Amino acid sequence: MREFQDVVERIVRPRAVVNADGQILSANRALCEQTGYAAEVLCEMRLRDLADLEHCDRDEAEFAKLFELGVGYTVEKRWTRADGYAQTRLWAHAPVDLEERGRVAVVEWFPVSGTLRANLAEQEIALRAEQLRRAEHLQVIGRMAGAVAHDFNNLLSVILGYAELLRTQLDDEGHRAHLDLIHTAGQRSAELTRKLLAMERWSTPEPRPIELSALLEGALRTLKRLVPKHVEVVAHLHGVQGKVFVDPIYAEVALLELASNATRAMPSGGRITIEAEAVHLDDAHDRTLLGLRPGRYLQISFSDTGAGVSRDAIQRLLLVCRGEESPSDPLSADPLGAVRRFVARNGGAVWPYSEPGLGTTVKLYLPAVSDLASEAPPPSELSTEGSETVLVVEDAADLRSLFATALAAKGYTVLSAHDGLDALARAQAYEGEIDLLITDVVMPRLSGPDLVRQLGPRHRSAKVIFASGFTREVLAARAGGEQIGERFLSKPVTPGTLLRKVREVLDS
Image: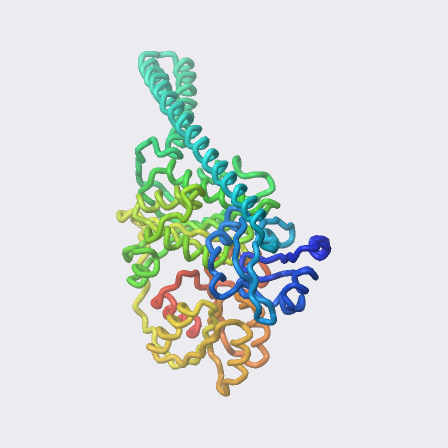
């Protein structure tokens, strides 16, 4: 990063490096001189803070796409200098992948001229034409692959059929064993063609009850063959027991799409973590988890250690997953298209979560087969009331308000803070004892584990619950993760789940 900053500094044109959240990481001398801001001031600002108020959200979707898909862009909008004077500039954004930081954006500013506008317009037209050409080319390739797979499947049906007929007519065990090998190889080939047909949606799904652990173990074998060697694939299935009613081929296609997205997000290497567990969703999840009915579900968590995406991008993706919004650009790949189709077809839901610089987790919820003998009992109806003091630390205002409201309704005294530093200030100002700290793990300025360390000397008896959209295993691989242990809430969190966990921890 140091060498990269030196290059940025020597550029004559105004230039800055920003992360997925829009935070300015470095700015060169030309940007300082033309805006009137000192470098240290710029590095405390977000990119949108430089833009005129009318223009700050103009390119929000394009900025998110830069980090998701690595697509650069140029936009014309005004910036506001330190003296309040507004000037129109062309803002050119380009993705750069750094080994130690992941993907960042390099932003460069140009004075506006008619010639430059015309050149950029021509480039934009050429780029869109090339994107359209590639999209059409991929569609043709897909149709050809589907047609070939379809015809090949017919040939395999003939081979398998006659092999089976011959087997019934032979008495020689040696010859029958050879036919068994032909039949087995033919069935594997048929599975491969079904995968091709499933990818192009040529085949009809054939769902059946299947153990989730067996489904994932089969998918893992395929993933480990296809994922590049610089990406590690690990699984934590937690001894999950339960069946789902799905087509295993379509399930594998959905997981392959997640692996493809994750691999693109980790150009310099990283780790894919797949986890599974049984969960019981209550009534509140009907609202928070994309319209799912209460009941027993099997959850698959698919995490990567890539650059992550902004919260705005995740919010848009959630709207797409709910069916409330279509993918913004028909020329761009829908990053969760196969996944959304798969879970929707099987009565499930998708819940994506990400933090810039920390990777992405996508959780799939699939209904457990209802006749499963080992069905897990619903959570017990123990009292969730209390009179203790709870400090809630959550940077998402709506979730913080939900936690505080639910706890206060059950008799708890609630202190709320929007990040770690705010929590320290509130804890120091509070004269009584804090019995429980509920904190997000990943927060700006001060993380949850760092907050616990700094809060310890003042409130030694306070118990701790960590909450995150990332899974426990993913967090354990990162700084501070070793502290999390079993006192952990996996987002999305409902009031019922929160209150039960609070009572469980306080009574332990």
